[in-house]
Image 1 (tube, rainbow, N blue to C red):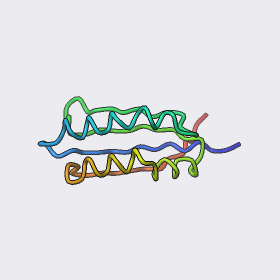
Image 2: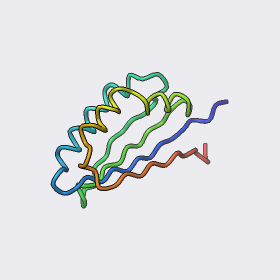
Image 3: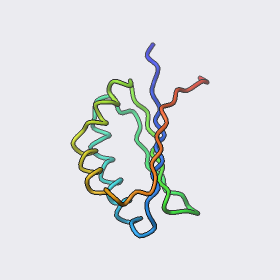
Length: 98
């Protein structure tokens, strides 16, 4: 059985660019959900600190996630938000309980 890869990505926008980053992140959802191997791709925004966004993702495999990481829509996001993101953290996770 293949272990599902869970990705937790934390994106913190600069205060002046919250809406720009949010709009760019929202544009990633539809094309990513159509990618092979994408099981879940949920975007969240912190209620108390709206600068902070979290993507919670599940992928059939790390190899398929790597294809996503090289996708055109992700490259477009990077160009669109260049200089607008204060910090970015990505964790590759595996589920320990059934």
